[in-house]
Length: 237
Image (tube, rainbow, N blue to C red; front, side, top):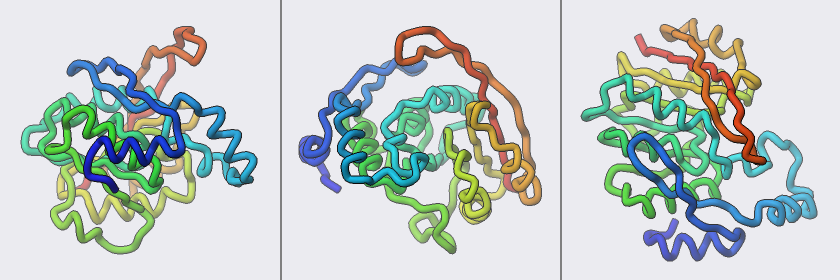
């Protein structure tokens, strides 16, 4: 991955028309790299017959999910000084950016999609957070403990990750290996995609707390909508 923002944007612009768009958050304003030619990109994927499984093959990583803001705001309830946070399935990394602005000592933004990692890295560099935030490829289904993170994390968080049923068991194993004792994992999921089975599985290993939060947002046509999200907290014994 390129070291400079200029080189990274040159790589991205081979495939996408992009621009940084303002994103208002509680700790000020972020700017997030946004795809301007999404329909053209989708049409190209269809022509290549590259969309076999929509949940995995569509560029869902490019969307700024409202749940990322909600979870970022929710994390304010917990101490951040000297604490580390790993974001899983981060996409363009909004949750990690918000957490870094909030004051976490170390933030790792991760995904398995290379385009998502490029966008996340560009967002980190553009917003001046490179000293605080690392971006890396991370597959939670890989066996064993990741040697890059021998000390584990105080917090692990993800927004809109639990819709993949086959990820549930390997994800719980990953959390067991990478959460520090007393550490917490947070998952935010739109109730339309809520997966109660995951909480039941998690309760066999973790102390589980579950709640609901509402969030007002606007749809693509600008109409205001209110959605309810499931907040799931797993605490490592």
